Amino acid sequence: METLIGRARHALGARKKTLALLLVFTAVTVWAGEHRRRWIIYLHITGTTQMRSLPADPSGYILQELPLQIRASYAYHHQVYFAGVGGKVSVADDRAPAPAPRLLGDAQIEPRMIFVSSRGTIFLSGVDFLPSVPPTGAKPGKRAMSFRFGA
Image 1 (tube, rainbow, N blue to C red):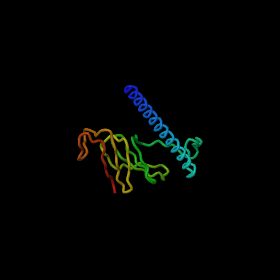
Image 2 (image 1 turned 180 degrees about the horizontal axis):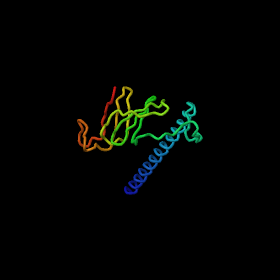
Image 3 (image 1 turned 90 degrees about the vertical axis):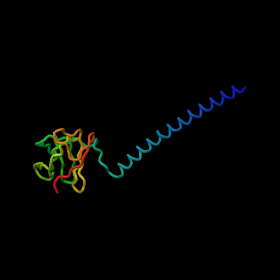
Image 4 (image 1 turned 60 degrees about the vertical axis):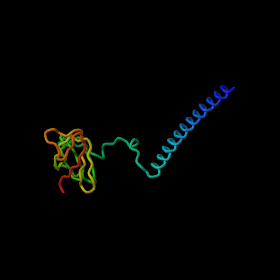
């Protein structure tokens, strides 16, 4: 008799676990769908441009080849910052008809990402430091540093 009651309790416990798991899965699915629906409504209300719906019309822009190889770029207002091969950091003004990049400095790392703060501090994240000129204060295994060039 006790084994029969024990089996019934075990089966009831397994059903409760399955039901709870099913309930959690349903709740997560509903939440994700509701979140996506709210996001679409927000984009519609704010009038955000859907890039995939724009026609491919090249009449409003010009493609120009730059005189340097770029590994990372960042635009802040009308200033466009480039990090080239070997860590050379340049800046150009995009309002100029033919912007000529001006060299700001050399970070001595192979860049991956670049960010410029509102105060002009340039953050450059790289793959590895070049072995020929290690940056000041570099620790082995450290892969990102901050550099400030110019004013």
